[in-house]
Image 1 (cartoon, one colour):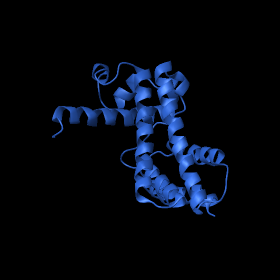
Image 2: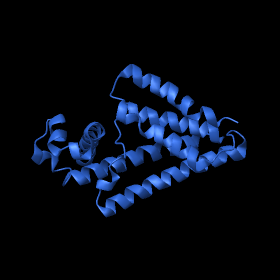
Image 3: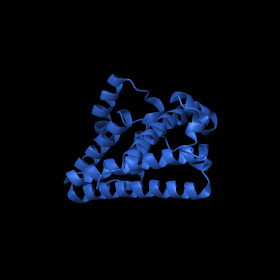
Image 4: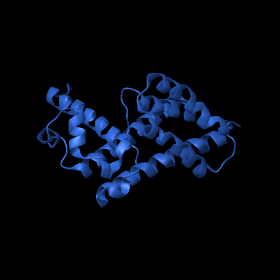
Length: 195
């Protein structure tokens, strides 16, 4: 079934909006970012921005859902392609980093979750918990198949995810740096895992 061209255009424009908003939130935080800041980056009027979102809280919520979707997409792809836990970790990290520093980035850092209204906050926290749990399962698989050394999977997962998720805070679009991050971060973050 063919996708509706109007819906496709809406999705493309909304994704562009969420990337611009993620960049603003990552640089200036929730309280330091206004909807006008985001509209200005996109050369939109305030009224045009309200076609896509009702308010700033909804915008940050949608940025966080997008970040969760990107992480899940990278993890699902790695799981489908790999046999061992360590290989899955390495490939997941590479895929996630490629998205974060590539054309689909930036991705919002989930540092302002308390600013969300309760329903949105609960949904985002559940998405984050599920992603962390799935990553811990990959670590457990690696311990079982012998590719990953025994470790506290909760602490290890938190350490790796924390480092990974902070990239958008300090990465600002330099192509050479993006290449280095994609090449080096998966190796650096997984070095201590090897059995």
